[in-house]
Amino acid sequence: MEKTPLGTTLLGKTGLDITRVGFGAWAIGGGGWEMGWGPQADDDSIAAIHRALDLGVNWIDTAAAYGFGRSEQVVGHALAGLPDDQRPYVFTKASLVEGPGRTIEHSLKRDSILHEAEASLRRLGLDAIDLYQIHRPIPDEDIEEGWTAFAELQDQGLVRHIGVSNFSVEQLRRAQQIAPVETVQPQYSLIDRDAEAELLPFAEREVIGVIVYSPMASGLLAGAMTRARIAQLPDDDWRRHDPRFQEPRLSHHLALVERLRTVADRHSTTPGAVAIAWALHDPAIDGAIVGFRRPDQVDPLVRAADLRLDASDIATIEGKN
Image 1 (cartoon, rainbow, N blue to C red):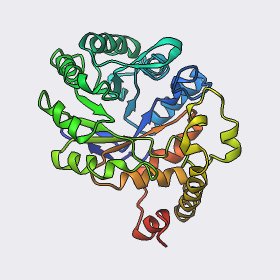
Image 2 (tube, one colour):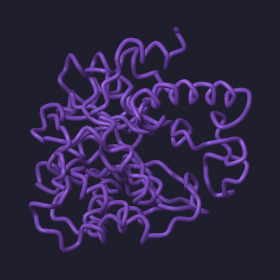
Image 3 (cartoon, helix red, strand yellow):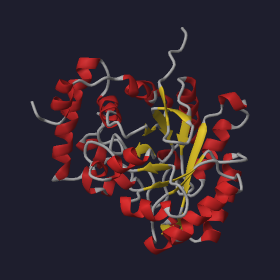
Image 4 (tube, rainbow, N blue to C red):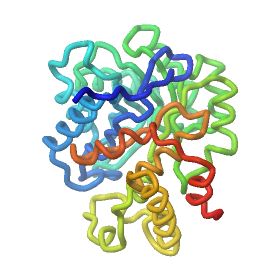
């Protein structure tokens, strides 16, 4: 059977034509570090990447911090040997570095950024990174130094496009005084909607590309998360200790999942796909980063961008009918 092409859209002014769902590689960094997801088999990760590519997904979002290099290494192994016309765009990030006990430390110093870029290129097996992003604007006072280093990497041709993640509008304006911010990456889901107030309208006005992360709230809205499953998460899965996965907020979120399930049943899909489609319905958003840990998780979610939610669906999701 011939594969139906996935819809694409331009990512801001970058000229990159991306599928509206991208492969998120946070979880494939595995466990054993401050924001890890518990044990993860690299063979499963590579199989999931290949399945997503087989279905037409054309970009991967990773970061040096995910497993402190492990995610990038896995992505590099998955892409090794692919012809250029089959290689997806690769997006990665810098500014979170490994501290004592595999904890996260923050650095936006020029030398640290340049060192991170070199290491990421090596792990990914690339001559140039398609989109390089500041992971977090910490320390705030070093944003200008970090963004200047990003512009330098772009001038050198080591990265093709530059963007930021987790920035406020005020921080974006500061960076834009140095070099254009081509993309922003905020957290955005039905339970994390802060970006709606200022960031998304600003990005739309400025024609800045937007890719959102955690549209399923790190699996909470996928439809498979239960109290029992949360209780059984490994100790090195950061979600076990996240307030969103605990009472009193958990009951509210699980009720939301049931509303997502109602809409999913109307469309013969999954609650997670509905959550992703809801995030993508905002006109400011170009793409959503969706994490996959196994190949069987890929198929139900990559078509979320094709799911058209009507006013009744939105009202059900948001508890207004």
